[in-house]
Amino acid sequence: MPTGITIQHYTHHHAAELRPLLLEVYAEIYADAAKTDPFATVERFAQGLDGWSRRPGWTCVVGYAHGHQAVGYAYGAPLPAGAPWWGGLRPEVSPDVIEETGTRTYALSELMVRVPWRKTGTAKALHDALLDNRPEERATLLVDQEHPKVHQLYQNWGWTTLGDLRPRIEHAPLFHAMLLPLA
Ligand SMILES: CC(C)(COP(=O)(O)OP(=O)(O)OC[C@H]1O[C@@H](n2cnc3c(N)ncnc32)[C@H](O)[C@@H]1OP(=O)(O)O)[C@@H](O)C(=O)NCCC(=O)NCCS
Image 1 (tube, rainbow, N blue to C red):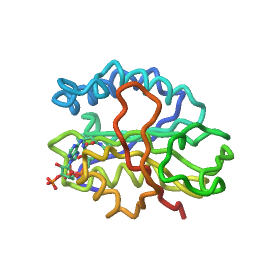
Image 2: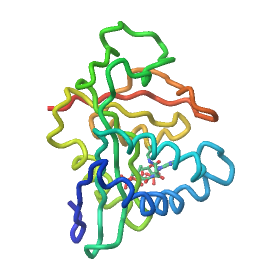
Image 3: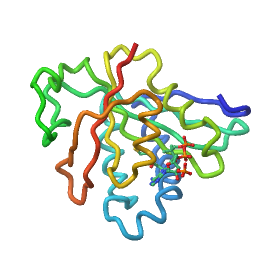
Image 4: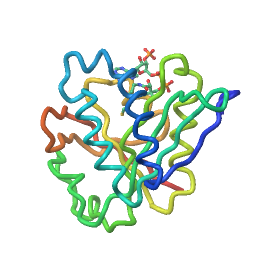
């Protein structure tokens, strides 16, 4: 954990209270991307955030410097039974690999760190704090295929790539679908 950063854990009970902060940090980090990419707008992100944070299993970690300044966050939720998450995965895999029971897989939906705290270990600390002590057997995430360095970063953190996936959401890019075993 980088010196001076504390991490707070939240659940869906805190979603309404956290929402303005999460949107503010997102807007700052994705300001350039949002100029050209309709998938990166704050409005699109807010819809996604509201969908995720409404789930009872939603969890979120926020890193703070000096006890109060948000430096980044991560959130996600377990995939429900029969979740459409894997829809469109290519190449096709054996159905048992992508069968969701409601308790099998935790989906890491977002991870972001404000620029001054990049390359400090803060991102990994948030990632680990979100995934530590999860009851699921594995985690999944989607990483944009246009961001190979981020894909590499996740590989360095132990994630493996299952295939290509484009979610059925307007303007969604092509992603690498990744998996991480949870001990
Ligand atoms: C992803 C993130 C949390 C990693 O933080 P970190 O561990 O401190 O690592 P870095 O910021 O150094 O990122 C690793 C590399 O990926 C690149 N990268 C990070 N986010 C990127 C993005 N959204 N698009 C393109 N490249 C990106 C960085 O420029 C860096 O490249 P470099 O090594 O040549 O400098 C942080 O870069 C971030 O918040 N990025 C923006 C949000 C994001 O893309 N989240 C991931 C969604 S799956």
